[in-house]
Image 1 (tube, rainbow, N blue to C red):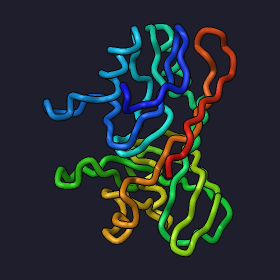
Image 2: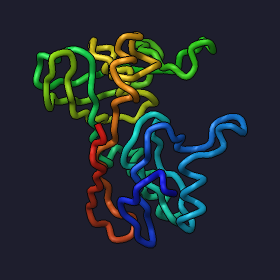
Image 3: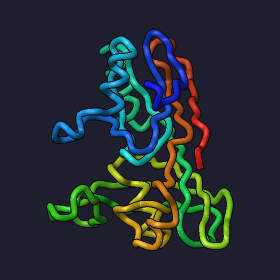
Length: 210
């Protein structure tokens, strides 16, 4: 798996730095069969995905190497005991230093809009995202983002909602913002878990490539 970088490995877990453009798990159809989960399973005995990153998001992704580790790590994600920090570059100059977005989400039911998500205060599931400004530019802002919940496309939709879509996001950004970057500028920077075997707190990090 030359496409990814090994961040950490032991007998219970594997942590990889997923490249942008690679699926976490197989999609529908033979053309989407190649993915990180399949490649990792070939290289690391027992490796199976615990959580997912969007195809176009790069960064830290965690895999378990046995059923017990998978069950415990899945519980940690479900119970929101895992701390996730992302870095994104968004359009415009964000004036506030930090903020919290608390807007419920659901899948867009129009098949023409798949796989987009929408905000829905009546039927959406709660989604909470914290963010902090890291650096401001003339037409963009680098932010650190910490999603509390783990909804699909949560960071991408939430940043759009506050008027600062992510550069290179072909689902939620206007065309001009899509063309401000050659890829989606969203990276899973740090991940903090409790080791499923030793119960020790662990933090993994993958350098931001943009």
